[in-house]
Amino acid sequence: MDAAFLKSAALENQYPPPDRPEIAFAGRSNVGKSSLINVLVNRKGLAKTSSTPGRTQTINFFHVGKELCFVDLPGYGYAKVPIQVKKTWQKMVETYLRNRPNLKAVVLILDIRREPSGGDLELFHWLRYYKIHTIVVCTKIDKVSQQEARRQANLIKKEFAEISPVDPSLFSAKTRKGREDIWKRILQCLDTPNGERGNGTKGNESSRV
Ligand code: GTP
Ligand code: MG
Image (tube, rainbow, N blue to C red; front, side, top):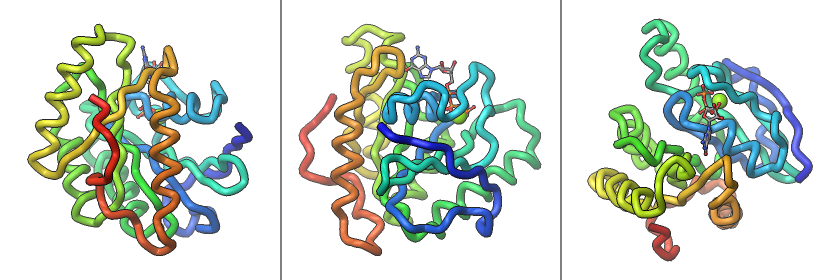
């Protein structure tokens, strides 16, 4: 897949022009957002990854093919980040999510081994409130057995259902399992009419858990 780094931005006036549909990747720090982007576009080092949480600190835009943009957002929930920096990141992410007119969907990434954090639930609530289509992905499934993955995914599903029903895709950046499924869901939401930022997660998709 033809993909290229386009721009890194903190402020709205630094964003590239909203000239093509955009998909943003959000989630806790170190969950695997950048790794997921790299697997989707088949380019190992495109989005910078790191075992140290807090690697992505600005909003990074990538052109994917000729008609799509991926956006790597800074992660949340990393305890060692000073409160002032946290606030700046939160504002940066919220400003982007609220105002980006070409945003088609947010891929919300969770670690299959963890219960959703307060930050995860808060973000999901917020995405529902602003009617931003959300694709939930549970990643790092290579770290657990298949049975454990199913169990954990059901638990995550249950917690999210308190806000709105979700149908998580299971993924591993290591084995690349789940890649096709996530692409399918991304391409599906590009079909929503222009100017409409998606209508939630209650589609007619089959259960993936
Ligand atoms: P920040 O930018 O710091 O918020 O992190 P991020 O969410 O972009 O995470 P990143 O992709 O940098 O991955 C963090 C660490 O998790 C790296 O060491 C990755 O190699 C590892 N990782 C990511 N996805 C997977 C996965 O599916 N399986 C395994 N085993 N490791 C993964
Ligand atoms: Mg990152």
